[in-house]
Image (cartoon, rainbow, N blue to C red; front, side, top):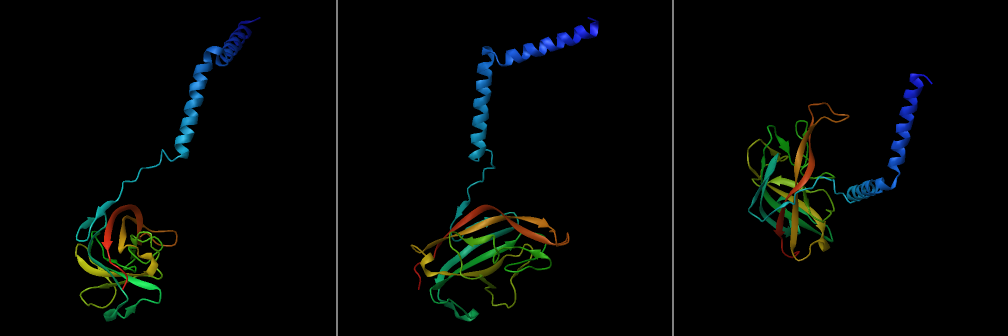
Length: 222
């Protein structure tokens, strides 16, 4: 046998020896430990152990300010009503109006609207499928109403760094009010530019983590 053949024979012999060692009795603890680790890892992933942990929302009362990435909100008052005569808004049969008065400040560098898009910017604060402001565990019966409290007409537009007092009114089922207490969920926002059908100068605020919750003592339905 030439030297090349001897070399290949040596390689095959070493490979066979490694294979025998891998399945030998002495290797059983190693494979058992590896198998147990694999099972543990699969269980952790299945239970969400590697998911990003979300921080619990900060709890606020009326009068407190929640300051987030793109806006701040201070709930000034919350109540229930059958109608708001000055705005010609009334609840239908089986409904009640949840009226939240708040001071809001736009922390971005451009104007944003509350309830509608303004200048290619959609803040998505209310009136969308995943709003930044919503009543926890309550599904409104229709889109919320929004207006300024200074009797100015037109859409509510938040100018940069100008605190503005607004009212947001959600029509909800009467039986959604239990013990006269509601919770206002406030989500943080990510500003994203452009979408598939929109140009890059369009900005949309997308719902991020649930950052704050306001406890609203609204009393009994009128």
